[in-house]
Image (cartoon, rainbow, N blue to C red; front, side, top):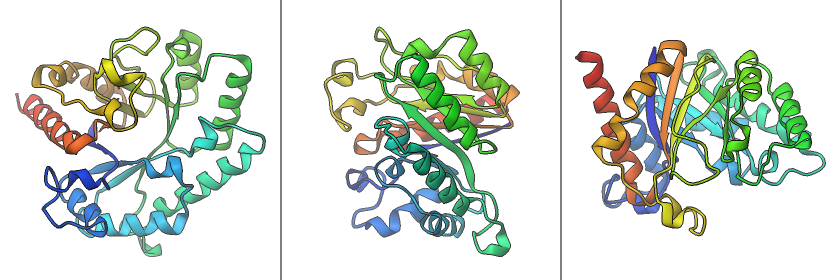
Length: 272
């Protein structure tokens, strides 16, 4: 079934030159990006809680150049990294904001449901404990009916009982490409939901634990590394109604280069 390939975020100053034409301002970035890709993963929503009106505006802007454009939206940090009492209100606020991507064409969104996924990415410090399992179950209950994808940075979660429960809830378990380091998830996929989801973080071993949000993802995939994923993506696509793949190696626009490469390889496979 359908595969959408894109980048994690689109508004980066250091993409001007490598991806955006010289002189491109922030206000013009989404239209340029949407003319070249069919989906984006919104990461600003991790730092700043989104609103329905703001997301609807982005949907209209993207639709003006790409009618089928889709958004995956990353959960706010108070739901995954900085969980505190009262998180339930933030979960509801986040869900309500996603309505801005799900209104119909008559309501002015520019073409209907544009929500590819609600992504909840949990850090390595989010261990497989009773407390965390309860939090996760409660979060999924509040988001029932949404196309949800979960990414675990700690391999403790990748056990049969978790996989089976997520499949029963029709929640996507995100496949990841990241450094081959102890405690991190392996490079594989977990078919079983109507949504397939893969994130490419790069394989920068030296900076993974000690780098910042720029140096950690400073990596450019080569052709062989991307081709490793073709059978895995095909496995997801054989089951899922929609599969998305996003590149988070955003430094200097490397994500856009690798996203275009992967899309080309998949197209070649389909024609072969």
